[in-house]
Amino acid sequence: MSEISAMAEAADPQPAGPPPERPKGAWRRAIESDILHSFRRSPVTIVAAIMTLLLVFGALFAPWIAPYDPFNPATLNLMDGFTRPGETSMMGHYFLLGSDNQGRDVLSTILYGSRISLFVAAMATLFALTIGIALGLSAGYIGGVYDSIVMRVADVQLSFPAILIALLIFGVARGIIPPSQQENMAVWVLIVAIGLSNWAQFARTVRGATMVERQKDYVSAARIMGVNPLRILVMHVLPNTLGPVLVIATIGLALAIIEEATLSFLGVGVPPTQPSLGTLIRIGQQFLFSGEWWILFFPAVTLVLLALSVNLLGDWLRDALNPRLR
Image (cartoon, rainbow, N blue to C red):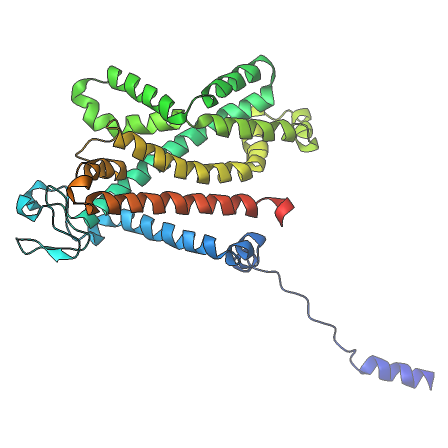
């Protein structure tokens, strides 16, 4: 009987267990990540992201979205000047947000001006990020006198407002560049001035993270194996310091937008032939008390919305990447 029961058990299939769980794809892991979960639970962040995307989309595709080309002299007519928002000018042109003193459509100038503001702010932040990471990594890894020199320079720079440092750098650069090339180089000079005034915060953050990472076992193992120090910094230490740097870069982008607008408002930014949001605000300020309020109001609101949205995204990213707040 025992042999018959054994044969019966062998013939009957065993109940199948639960099927093995299939590995999740990259898209599924991204959807279920803590960062995206935090994003979905924050209505303010969602609104800020939508607003940022709309403004960036409008700036990138301004030549196709803008109703008019505001910087083409052939299409401008002074008879269209000072048209109120939502009205039709004497020449039969409709301006949704009104027109300025030169007959330029305010909506079109905002779209084109946002392109320059975003380009200058993004390139200046990238420039400051590159310098700050390079100096912070090397100072934190090498240490000694070199670390002290870099940090003391950063401390001195952080003791002054960034706008004053940018003004100083911009003035020195304008004195070096020949007058015939100043208008063509104005945007790049502005990028360098803003970038050099904001590298210190990146350097201090990266230097602190590097000093922590260089004490870990994987760095010691790489040193023992004879790996080149530059390769250790770039391939091993740098990826572990990018979390806080990304947060600072997002907030720094908003500050760079405001700094560019401030410099352009003071008349030392981009030339009038390539006006940014700050230049448009400076132009509109001249007509504020004469009743043409829309020339100043709409560029100023755009600047506030852009800087505020990017800043809110930076605040959310800082909280989302902080493990203590999860």
